[in-house]
Image (cartoon, rainbow, N blue to C red; front, side, top):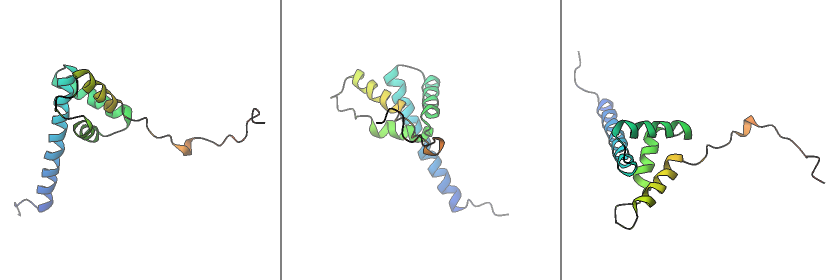
Length: 109
């Protein structure tokens, strides 16, 4: 039996740890800015993920990279507003295949 980890196992583990680290960092930011606990912060992130059709990790990555740094130039209120924008995300793209062409309307003269 081969008990040595395969290279892909190490790569996958490393990728998982990196993903987890970003998610934990984003969760900490949500906790700090909203003044909530760890469980509630993750619930908010999951809810936002579902509502915006974005994976939790991708949302976490946006929080970590798009939120302004701690240079002291932003108020807590400004940072919360920016976090709100990120958490609400852009509206999901419309599925053009689900709509039918309506053609000209009666009002178009």
